[in-house]
Image (cartoon, rainbow, N blue to C red; front, side, top):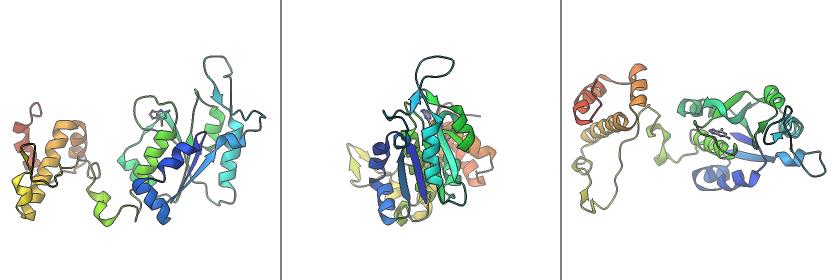
Length: 253
Ligand code: 6GU
């Protein structure tokens, strides 16, 4: 899968894409991250890419020309137009279903904005998806782009090792993940739950499902409600939840 990133800070992206799980996938050639410096497409002798807003007001606005030329360079020789994601707090909120959907694309182009904004005409012309990573304002689209690339790439076949399967992740079934433990058996007086040492896989699976439900009920009741409404809970889940309702304060129906 190919990610093309249009940005004023390509080093920010480059660095992260060579570390950890994503770095390994890049090395293996499963994913490719191409960074394009929008400033390289400036036609100004001072390499400016922004100007004052028409109508006045504070701050600077990124001009459409350099972004368009950068985009045209990425598109040269392509027969189909990839989705073009503009990172903006005014976009649709990025979540696991959108990550899964985007992971089925062959190529995605990201446009990272900066300053006070980007000339609306270039957005109208090239952008297919406006995406936000949450309801707070950041100084630029680079970190959101990296977050999206990480979440999308780990859904791509071969990016995670067999032991890191994405299927068990929090959010894949709409619930938070169960707690994990490793050695030692006792740490600062706290013991690993007995069931995990029992070797009884049926009991372990049941305990983990119950913990997933309990954690989601305690921390993200909004997620639990979504799963309930979409029919994601089995009869056994509903029975476990009925038991938990007494255990988790304030969770009663
Ligand atoms: Cl995608 N960009 C910026 N600048 N701020 C954000 C965001 C994106 N998502 C949340 N806040």
